[in-house]
Image (tube, rainbow, N blue to C red; front, side, top):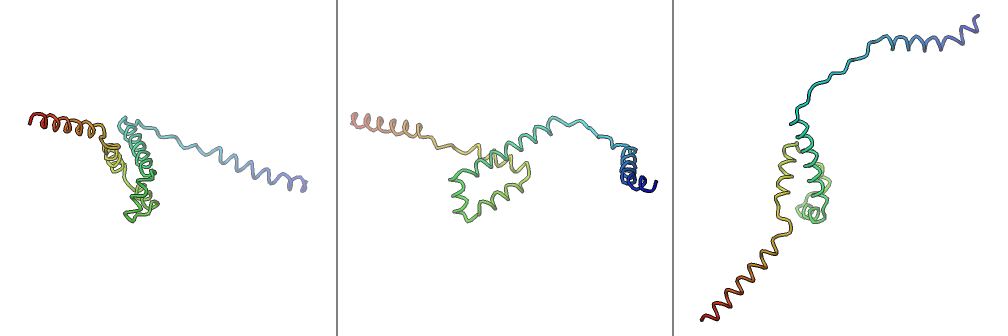
Length: 124
């Protein structure tokens, strides 16, 4: 009898522990409505962070950062510490930067000036 009790004792402790765990009521989930603006702001913030990260990953931007004496890893750490509103503002400023300049407008302006000069020279 003693031998049987000794073999069953670990199983009995396990069963007691499981019974106690099952008798504790589970914690109920708390659900609430989430406003649409909150979700849109979160997605806008994630998009803005990705835009700034892609901008920072460009080689010309990285070389400009290094030329200013800032370590690129430190710049990324500073980017991570920005608030959502600051990141959105920075992404908006990046999107408003000119992309490659207005070369076609420059060419048209030069042609117009050359034609005007030729017309003036013919009239004189």
